Amino acid sequence: MEKMIGYCGYNCHLCAARSDDISVRQKMVDAWKKYLGHENYTAENVACEGCKSKGNKIADKQCKARPCARDKGLDSCAQCDDFPCDKVKHLFSTPIGMLTYRAPKFKDITEEEFNFCVQQWNSMPNLVKILIKEGKLPSFILDRI
Image 1: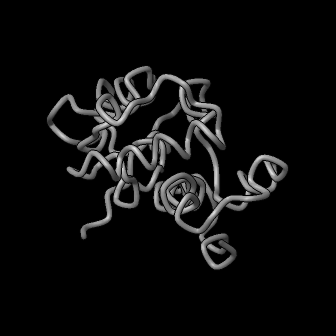
Image 2 (image 1 turned 60 degrees about the vertical axis):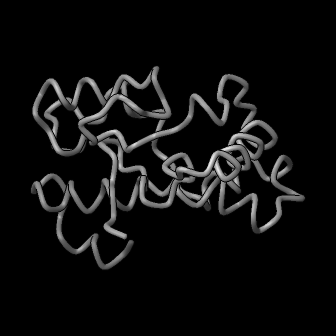
């Protein structure tokens, strides 16, 4: 599967919201609710083609990063002169960061729940790579991430 990286660095290619199987999306929604407290997602409304798709099926309809990046003609928020901004900062994450920050909540997470709920949140390495490519960070950092 081709790697799909969202404007915010999110690993769309790993996200269960892209599945055509509603039971797969339901497992993700259940894990998001249990571990992240997300109450507004359903297996139906989370169906997503990826934020860079031409269609309108996207999981996070309140996302402010997607329309901004599209309006500016960017492939990544990291290319923007205003990066990082309030539209995208809250989306910066890594699975390790999420697990550490919310350790008490994730104490009993199963491997399946992790795969549905957490693995796709690895935006920061993707953004750092783009920042390096754009000349906004020194290249030696690539060896450190």
